[in-house]
Length: 273
Length: 153
Image 1 (cartoon, chains in turn cyan, brown):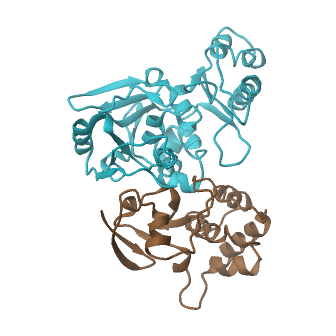
Image 2 (cartoon, helix red, strand yellow; image 1 turned 135 degrees about the vertical axis):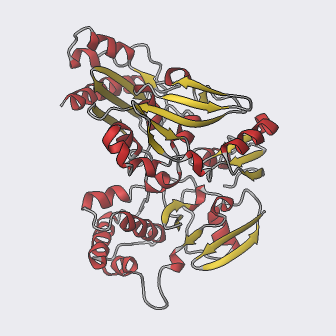
Image 3 (tube, rainbow over the protein chains, first blue to last red; image 1 turned 90 degrees about the vertical axis):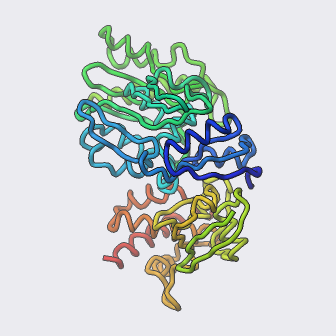
């Protein structure tokens, strides 16, 4: 399978990428590692007239200590997150979840910004960014803006990014001592989660779910139940409240609801251990 | 567009369509057919090659993205008649049946051992999760990787 023809341009900097985007707007797509976009193009589900390759914009590949939070460049590869000593010390959940993405080959190419921009509810990192209340730094032709994780993920493969904007950085809180667990249910080791659940316990408890709707989701009912004094078992029973999980070859919505309740309970138990 | 890629130590400059996949470049432009196309959807790992020493799935990378990089395929592992230690271990442990996944398995293994020189059995199994063997020959493959790691020590 070969993508439909397109024009290929390589951007040398974030500034150049944004300028080229501004010129070509809707017709152009940004290419980072290509782990999500290229399969879509090969299946002809996406047929952009132009690819702007930002894969070599080295200035957007970093993990930095910024006092009370960490700054992660949008083009930081999963492999670099997985092996980052700063993340291991200051935000272990991000390191752990990055290591769960795809397989070694995918993690050698794929980037955190690419995964977030793709906005796939079945992906691992978007749910964690939601659970961590990450902040997204976005650069457009005229200005920069920041968007919270709750506002960033809008719908299935849809984010707050406008066609002429580039995600440049993701900020995550330091969570060196947080209890954390990611329960990923899949049929084969490298697959997307049929359902995934993660819990971050850091004073309060945050629970996020993978593949339970059009976007990554916070299990709000579970969080409220816990805050109100419910036990883990009682709270986890509410994991599927208000969700509309998808139906596909792997699972019916009812099965996904069942998985959500079980996986949220396991994640909470493991994060409390 | 013009791409310049060093493949198995040799500089290769070619004019290709922007949409040319790295695996097409290797197989069709250079005639290096050791790299296989299996699922064509970045699931099976048969097309695994090294780009700047790291394993990637060449069916899901553009040749343009490898411009300026060093690519190693299965053809570039042996030096003359002397097989690479990973190839030797696959041979000795009979880590293949039909052989279709083998080139990808070997390349993924070279990258894995580069990153984790002395892996546990679990690390080997996790490290090769991106490579499928339809003959279900995984046990011997894992034995071969562990043997290659020991040989490299």
